[in-house]
Length: 275
Picture 1 (tube, rainbow, N blue to C red):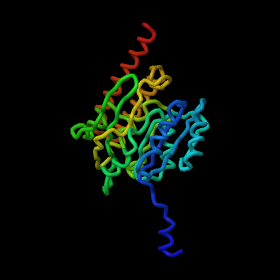
Picture 2 (cartoon, rainbow, N blue to C red):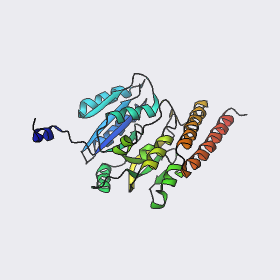
Picture 3 (cartoon, helix red, strand yellow):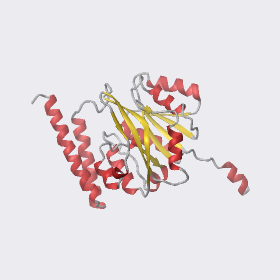
Picture 4 (cartoon, rainbow, N blue to C red):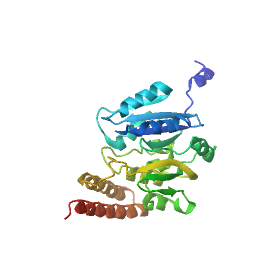
């Protein structure tokens, strides 16, 4: 095969891989998928990972796969939690940039990926900080500002250290072998810290990209249990091991923050038990 034929056989990567996590969200998943399908920007791949749902979530996803024909649908044989779901999606992703979308949330408008593409332009930016709006049992508008986009702030002081409020260059994740911890709550803490500290460049998308639903019934973050405490301690253990291997001033800040969160969650359990 000559060089020209080889070049024709090379599959051009998509601009965005949108990874949608799905677990027992039959009332929300269609809206999430439709919000991506309806984007005016079409150079995307949609990856939906079903984490062994026991309700009608899987049936709804299958229906939408038949309707659109362009959804990459992946299924777990057992419930592995959000970190594993995202890792499964990342293993399949081919896009230049990764956008995470929880299945109970949705993209704000039909042109947000088009606007995000323009923000990135021809640059090879590692991370783009996204605006988002919180709905549900509370309302808040969060738009990234320059003074809150330093590595120290984003890695250790950000009020919302979540993976979905950033757009990640896939090459950043691959060259640093960054993935989520699995079978664990608060999986974003280590992922975001690693990504931000390893990033070499960033941009700001100063408009709402995500609509985040707060206080959804049956959400794993709605009620604090001992599992929340156990997984917070696991994060602390990993952070302390990372501190020994590669010290940064940011890791001390985030360790103190996680210790404070552990105490807060213990107090919530104490309050629930009326002790």
